[in-house]
Length: 91
Image (cartoon, rainbow, N blue to C red):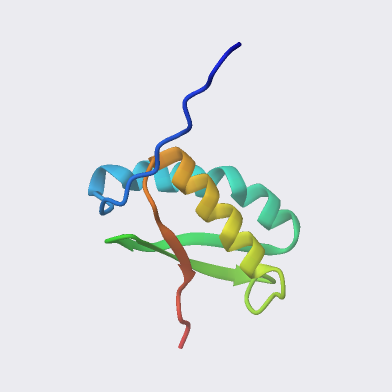
């Protein structure tokens, strides 16, 4: 019988060294978002929060919550940290 170790997710703050990983995750999902007429970019990251700017058709899209959830899961896996992903408030 083979056992696997679950990926550990820690509740620690984001650090400047995490920014390239965040950008890499966003770069990986960006082509799918652009294919639907939208775009996404990193606005800021601090504490446990990643703020992204939704653009194009993503702004106000009914499925943007699902997109943010997918990004959150990918970031938590890539960083090994508990994070939340929220959209930037546009004025």
